[in-house]
Length: 514
Image (cartoon, rainbow, N blue to C red):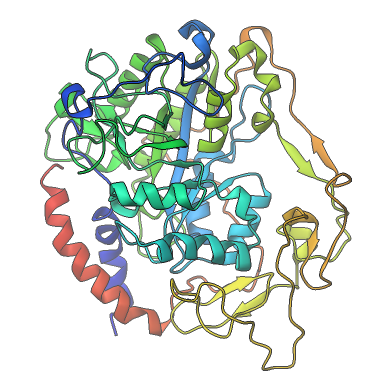
């Protein structure tokens, strides 16, 4: 068995080896060979790869979007990590910040996925077992398991990101065949101030890919043609070295400007500088793409520098003080791209509103709302990775070959009912097998406020400032109460040991750029 202390020491390396870094340009105009006729490719279902804002808007009319995403397993400590940056913030319309969680299923606690989704966040596919260049079983199995055990509607799982950002032309084809809306695995790797920038607004693959053309064989120069399927590039930050100093996922782990050690002040400077370049040019989105485990303060053995956490909050505070800045999920960004309106008219974008499901707090229903589901969760005590769920424990652990096993009724418990297509997750009672309403009567309250003049309702987080001091963040309380501090029992350690060995080897390739 791998000693716990050793695992704790190696865990940051395990995440580092999968951090999705880039070392320089991943595309060029020549490699892209991209051509698209905007008169024939028109919104909302077709968009050319372009650095200009969609809908013919002027940059001054366009909101500056900051996309926030997280990758990998969902646990209370990863949600703690996300919440220390987002829970205290609101967008200009007064709505809490929503984000995209690209979820892989090893070590995921399914009930927390339900809770996170019902709270308004986007749940997206990151394969079942976190493998690059995945098979269809890995991709589709994730869909099936998230639907069966977390109650996420299949229609709501619209996005995909490849683990390690390792995908192929066939991966994109599999996603389109499975009716995903978008992929977000490619990099925008050239600064927006460079005339050859590949920082395109999200676009459809009617005319092939335009990003990662130097890295992914069989893509670009018109391939693969997947009409209506979107690519949302991941927009890199750049330090003082420009195009040879990109920082993509978890940029706060990188040393800036060719230095040998991480410097939070230098990181904050280049993050502000890159944001300003986007803001002062065509306002292409910028992204914070995270592996939350790196910055978890509630997982034993992971001790991120408080100065780094405060630096990230300082960046977000500063960004939210600028005019018309919104922190969004991928699905919110894409909704606006498909229906572009000036910042002053963002009230018309449904996904940016904050709608709350109206369920009586006294109702006992296992639905992803804490006060309703207390005491109703099933504990699935598998040796490799136990989890909680509203939807009944399976006989065996879900796997790519068997993502929805039969329920375990060996103790005489009644079977629970999986979410049907005609009911919304917070209104579905999986124990009684009934919907509290029909699609026309499910009640939601809209708590968003009107957009002010020029979209100027600016609401900074107020938790940054001097990032050498610590600011306490509210912990994300698991809604199952009885969840152990770690859901990684002894049976998981052999697999983790192999992963850590691989991480040590993979880290050598990553550390060379730090």
